[in-house]
Amino acid sequence: MKVLHIFLGLWMLVCLSCSGFLDEVDQDKFIPSTTDHYASVLLEEFNKEPGIMPDVAFMTDEIQELESSFASSSYRNSMLPIYTWQRDIERTFENEQVGNNTSWGRLYRNIAIVNYVIEQIDDATGTEAERDYVKGEAYFIRAYCYFSLTNLYAEPYRSAAGAEVTMGVPLRTDIGVVPTYDRAMLSDNYRQIEEDLGEAIRLIGNSGLEKSIYHPTVAACRLLLSRVQLFQKKYDDVITTATGVMEVTGLKKLTAGSASQPFITKANPEVLYSFGGNSNSAGVFGTTIQRFGFETHQELLGRFPENDLRKSLFFMPITDKSNYTGYFTRKMEAGYSSLAWINFRAAEAWLNRAEAYACRGRIGEAQADIRALMENRYSTLEGVTIPSEQQALIRFIRDERFKEFCFEEHFRWFDLRRMEEDERPEIVHICSDVDESDKKVGKNTYRLLKNDPNYTLSVPEQEKANNPFIYDYERFDKMPE
Image (cartoon, rainbow, N blue to C red; front, side, top):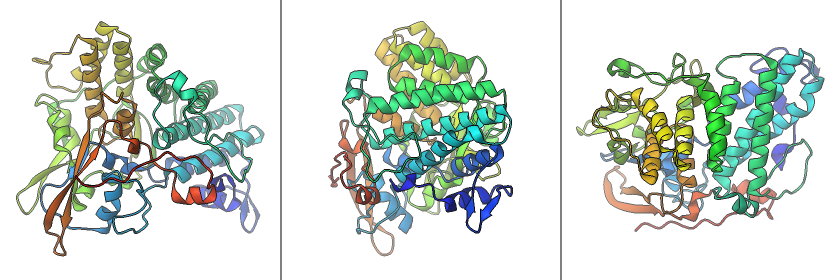
């Protein structure tokens, strides 16, 4: 795996720009030796790099083609293979190669770096508290990377028994270099993710250190752990872990005047951790998708009743020259001086625990959790009925989750994947043909089926060229209806 080669030139790239204190060994080599060095490596590589496949949203029911006219562009053309769930998302309809499938390499690069940090940090100069914190942060990053990889490039987790015989993603926890590598079992991936998060919680907790919002806290580690447990249907564990987050965090109450500024800001006490480049690196935000012919899906907008304050806070209407009004997300601040595009928020703990309670049949407790969230999101709950029938309640909670976390991270795509096939919606995307004057001349309909194999991405072409024997999940060509 090429990304497992720790070339010293990489240290120059990821460290030199954010710190001037790396000792130069020779003309082209830097060797980290202090806890500050290793902390800088993690911050620069993981926290400041562009978001990990933010274009995942183009495969979901969050986005549709812009109803009005739009200008064709190379960006739109590059998004169409993802938007229409093609077998090969790295090739446009004109067979031009595009960089739509880079997450595999970037995530394994992160893993290679944190493996190096984990192996070397114990010998770094610095306090024991700093060594513990940096090592804990490295374990957290590795867990997040493997969780992302398994939910992009492996089949969804269905059961403990099924995970034992389902191919996951290659698992590396050291800095050794191997010429070829195989997929691990999905159960091994999730076992490693949980072990890493356990170490992150222990080490960050032992350090006693509290850093900026760009570094994980114990609460952020527990929040991710509760998500991982939810994906494995470990509902009792979810309840315990999410409760630990809820005990040290809270929810922000929205008001009618909240729409004057984005919801996800540094001032929002719900934000526990922010990472993954700035939000401008995700093309689904603001007017970026408008310029390239996409907008917020009308069905998503229709899920917000009038008394749900999130609609006016999360979305902005823009009327174009043809008098068409489309809606575009504006949930967060943009720019490296504020927040990144991935933000761990306390609201997820309430939703994770509510769903776990509902799946365990603890209806009253599930209703209480979802009501607590809604009381902070709705102007009034008058006329709102929270279901008491178990399956209806689970659907209700997941719908609130969709609304709460639309256009954030990979929430919707990962949640669609973990649904049972009979619960998943079929997703329909319209893709128009345009002539040389950018006039729409015909519409094509593409459909992602409930049990579609294209819910799993293929290993990137370059990676398969490096390791031609790696097992790859089969995807199918998508033709317009």
